Length: 371
Image (tube, rainbow, N blue to C red; front, side, top):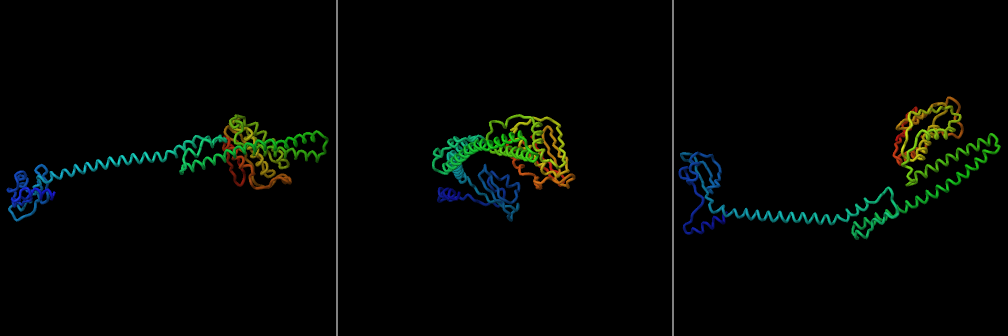
């Protein structure tokens, strides 16, 4: 504005004119603002856009007590409007360049992240529930270059190879172990049947009976561990089976543990539920719970309650107290724990979608198996 004012004065040389003038009274100010000045405005600065005037109202020793300083900006501010257009052009160019830069950045970012997204999609497509030896071929590190993504793909590929090899070894082991461990049990069972048919004394018959029970427990233990170790078991986990017969079978198989304890088993069958899962796994779980209850209940401290409802099986037994009958036979478990099989029961329940909980207090222990 100062430059424009100087040029405007140079054009009128030697008759220099000034754009800044003072007026002692309102009647002498320029005509466009005279009526306004005569109305007695307050002190301050005023701008009249249409008239292109800037006015300062100041106190003075006049009749009105006001003086006026008028700055005529005609021809000066008009030229400065070009600066606004220049600023608008610059702002527009900067905005366009910023938008182009943002779009280019998004494009570059997507192209940089694309291999990671592709790798994630490939990994998500692998069925981890049924992992096979060929699954590692779905991820080939060569497809992702030699950068960080390629290194990550190579690590995942090697991991899947190791997991696939482990699955193969697990299947081979469980298949071989199932045959090799069950064969001696079958031989022992056949020998016991032959011994039972012979003429045995009372002591020999008791020894044979103990061997038979130990063989049954060993067979149950082998089946239990093989059931847990197998990754797949021919779809038996989707079978529907009645619960009551398996509960009765487990109680009868473990009833010998109560010999000499004077403990009554109270079975309450309130429903006949049908459960979905692996029947052998259910029998193993119930057998563990019943065995723990029979072993941990002191002599004469019954009854042991087995309660079967529509949604759960409850096994409750006393956990302490003096024997009211005779001492527990030698060799019976006297530990205060609740059996080593509860962790196995928990794993079997998780595998089949059942729920297991154990509640204990000073008087009793309650095991709950729900479905």
